[in-house]
Image 1 (cartoon, one colour):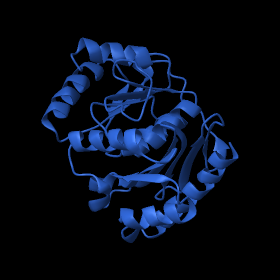
Image 2: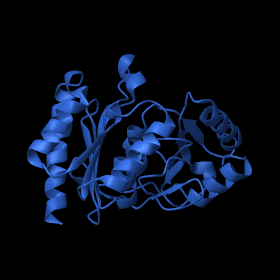
Image 3: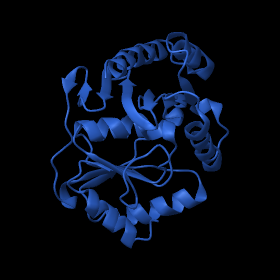
Length: 255
């Protein structure tokens, strides 16, 4: 709709401001105030609003979906890849998604280090700096470049180790870049073939999910169910090798 396109433009302006003042603008209160000044009837969920831990983040998105007075919900990660940011690695960026009635309709990921802005509006395709993008065309695991995470939580760590052990001999290579937003954007543009992770929050993946779907890829949970804002165990790919990745992970006991 026109409203969704307008939100996309405004989301980009927020991204630009956030990256111009990368440290100062990391305050979610500032971002919230910027959003609500333009869209006072919209709701907002930022990573820094929520206590650490998967239980708290799962409860936060569930509460928003159940009780929000607005059809629109902004889901924001001010800096995805915080550890990279702290250590001066240029693999960190803000990620903004907007959901309408529980479905993501707008996503923006802006990489200030490479000057690349990834955008998507539901039903209108995915773009990078205004140019249409598509997922890669690798159709076999042997050609696939697979990304994954390095999670600190014990259960997620164990599942990640199971996954890397079975995938590494089957795929072309594995990459761990430390930013879900970056890895999802790179799946959308075809630099990566697949990115999977055992446990992530809505602010980590919502913008990337619509980017990948609009770029012709596939985004599901680890059981193959379609993406929703409650999904935490996720797999995003070009679609061609999606089922093969899920099968390998399932056989390895990644559940």
